[in-house]
Image 1: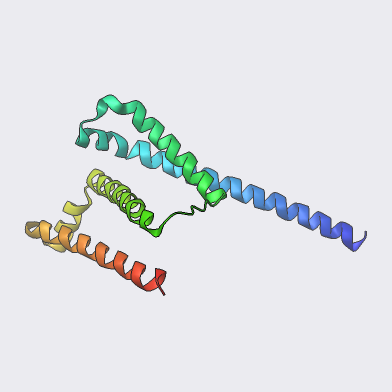
Image 2: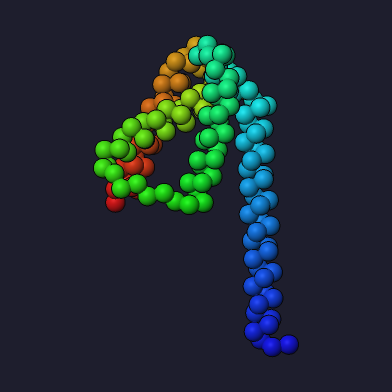
Length: 150
C-alpha cells in the first residue's frame, strides 16, 4: 500500500471521528439545554413573574429563534461593520438576559436561602445578595478593562 493511500485513509478516519465527536457534543449540549429549560421550569417561572402567560407562543419562538441564531452565529461568525456604540445596547441586553436567567435559576433552586443558612447569615441575606451583585460587577469590569482592552 502506498503512502498516499494510507494518508487518505487516515484523513478519512480523522474526518469521520471529528464529525462523530461534533455530532455527539452538539447532541449532549442540546439535551442539557432542553433539560435545563424543561426540568427546572425557567421559562414558566419567568412567565409567572412577568404575568405573560398569554404570550406562550412568543416565548416558544424566542427560544427556537435564539437557538438557531446562536448555532448559526457559532458556525458562521458574523461581522457587523457598525459603530462601536452598538456594543453598548447589545452588551446591555445580553447582560440582562444572562442576569434574568441566573436569577431564575437561583430562585428555582432556592440557592440564596441555602447559602445564607450554611454560612449562618440568614438574617443578612440582603447583604449576601448585594455582595454577589457587586462581585459580579467588579469581575465583569475587571475582565472587560483588563483582558479586552489590553
